[in-house]
Length: 201
Image (tube, rainbow, N blue to C red; front, top):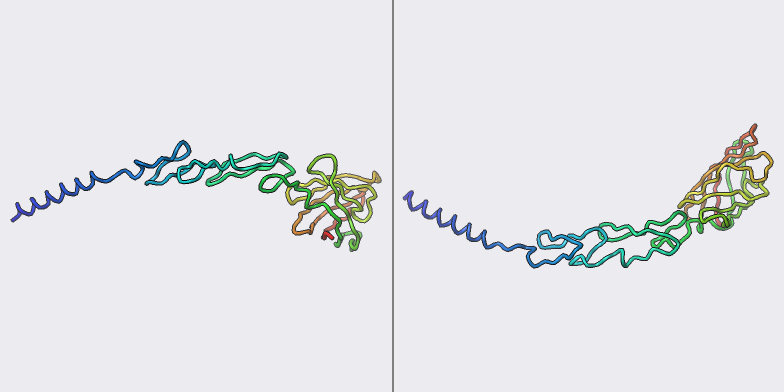
């Protein structure tokens, strides 16, 4: 009886080996070209490439505007990394463009108290693509205050626009037509610390 049992096991083992040896290579007829590797019958593409056979070059199809932008391959796509001062999917938009306009200012200052109810205007500066000019800043400066734009951030480096001993410095952020800014005005003796909301008209 035991002999018969082991004979049956032997047949089963041989059959199993036979079935295993008949398994096909899932990647045998799959061509992933030069930009992909076959895994279990599917192409896994390198960064920047896609499609069934990884033949689609996403970076080749992408347009980064002539204003500046570098193509960077990503998993399943390609992105434009914009030069300083530009943004958008194709780097064609100046970051400072959204800041340009006339704003109504409301806010409070530590020394001068309520400092609002007046307008300022932001315009492009001819210096470079990241620079803007702010007129009537603090409802007091006659000359323009120079500011720098980076994405949604506006920064005022320490300066004395009117050359009268009153320096201004500060920074703020832009969102949906509103700039929220903190800044200081100082003559070296008295410092006015202000927080303002500037709403585009």
